[in-house]
Amino acid sequence: MKNLNLPTKFTLSRILAVPLILILLTKESSFANILAALVFGAAAFTDYLDGYLARTTDTITPLGKLLDPIADKVLILSVLIPMIAIGHIPAWLGTLIISREFAVTGVRMMAATENHIIPANWKGKWKTGFEIAAMEFLILQWDIGIIHFQTIGTILIYIAVVFSLWGAYDYLEEYWNRQYSKP
Image 1 (cartoon, rainbow, N blue to C red):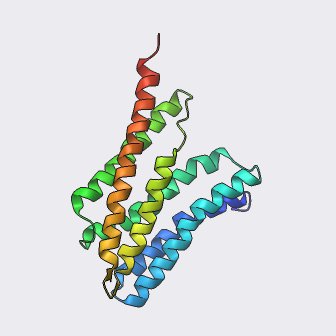
Image 2 (tube, one colour):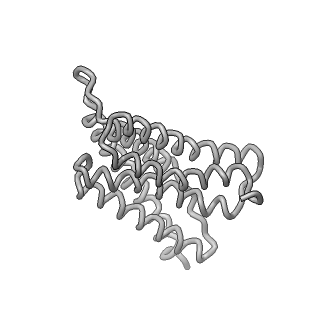
Image 3 (cartoon, rainbow, N blue to C red):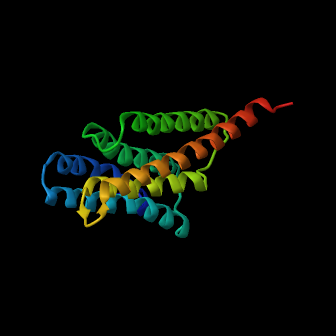
């Protein structure tokens, strides 16, 4: 760990936070849910922080480029799956989100084997933002007057799916055009 730069350490912290989040999600108490939401939120913030630090300090590394999307997926999916299991997200919707992640990762990996990097696009960033916000509301499950966190979380996850599929189409289109538009 001591040979890793600070942005990569933040990326790894996202992965290392997952077991604690999962332990907290298994507890049936409001306090555990608050702690899970706080740890998840802090871990999600490192996604912004590691990228910002790597760019501003010119410390972007191949390891960081590899680990960052993996850490994002591990964090999001580790909360998504329990949310499906306890009925806060419909299974079909969760399957769609997970399938999209595998498809896009596969396309990006295939492109990388041909020395073509398909960078993250703004739709993917918005997707991630909506997923994070949705998970926060779904973890907390509060009802404050007429404000129901389950409803807000559900709306946000549907918005995330729109950005998810829209962005996935762009990745697939870019790869397809690169593969099949060759002279």
